[in-house]
Image (cartoon, rainbow, N blue to C red):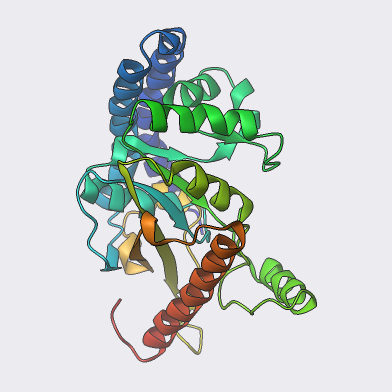
Length: 307
């Protein structure tokens, strides 16, 4: 529930970030024409600008508002380029991924799949374009030229990158999960737990394009989980319930009400299947494993275990 004091606090915290974001987008927009002549220089400069912006909003979440993100799984090597996939629960998922990127020294190198409509937004869209963000429609036939643009820099110039996507392409909700179960039963697919069925087309394209790129070493498979304290609930914790955008920016003690967790699996790219069908099955299997992992976290909450 929002309060007047909380709203004022959120505005005061957010205003400097918005100013920095606007200035950064203006600079990135100015750099856009130069990217045709100095692609690597613009990429490196835009990565540094992006790192400062993203670190600012991450600091609001973890320092000003005391969100405590816990981690498990594979300790990521520093400065390694990778394809990053994750389940999608909430707007706040990007905080979880950025926390890992900071630990790995790759915050400024994060490149997220974003909606192509953002191209038309002055400054913001131009800034995303200058940074090398993949701006897609989710129609992979239509997006082939855009993907070629993104992959070209990574492959030709060996740009360090985390290329990040939510394989489900939409956020998890109970209603969407019910639809997923109906679809999986109708198509003879295994039933996931706590996730939606992953969309495979973009994943397959990305792996096939970057498999032979020497500096892109691995797939990082992230499992994101939340829990909100619910004293009135029988289970006391509402699993996969995250703060909304404004709560993440305005509430001063997020650690008192929410749990935040990321589990990391690292898979060498050279170990993945070669065929489209093999990659599709691999991603499906990882999503089933992800559901089992999420259920284990849920059961741990019931047993009073710390994440």
